[in-house]
Image 1: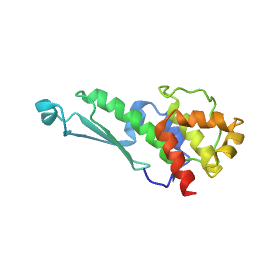
Image 2 (image 1 turned 90 degrees about the horizontal axis):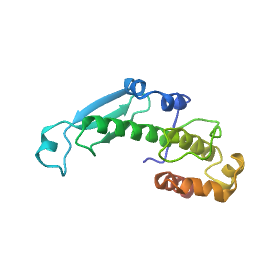
Image 3 (image 1 turned 45 degrees about the horizontal axis):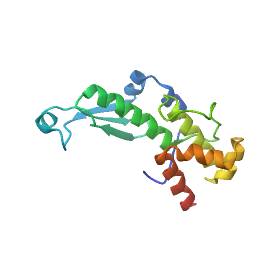
Image 4 (image 1 turned 90 degrees about the vertical axis):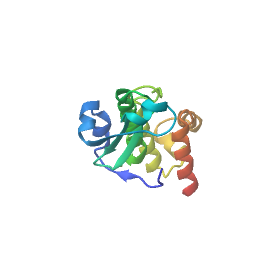
Length: 159
């Protein structure tokens, strides 16, 4: 993941789109995946790649032998990558701070937390004050998601 963000005020609209509407603003490619899986994997184009046209973020999935499952998983990955890479300024606090990683609202929650951190130059204690949380509570929220925690750490180190 790059050390720069894409800034776009439409990010929340993208994250709130239905799967069908999100697919409409993406380029969809099907391809044959390589790797384990035997003959079927090499004969069918069940791997899926979505490229979000407005942001140029691309994700792919080939974890299942089913193209439909790969498509659904790739859409989840796309929402998460948009949340990680696209910033809105100024950031607004998420409506809820107790969102599970498996909740469909998790990408937008992640996006809002990262917006607040970005506004506070990734200084966790300042971001925690903006969110009206203790620093330790914000750290616990961030550490639940290894990818999010690594992203925050990489920006703290580069600052």
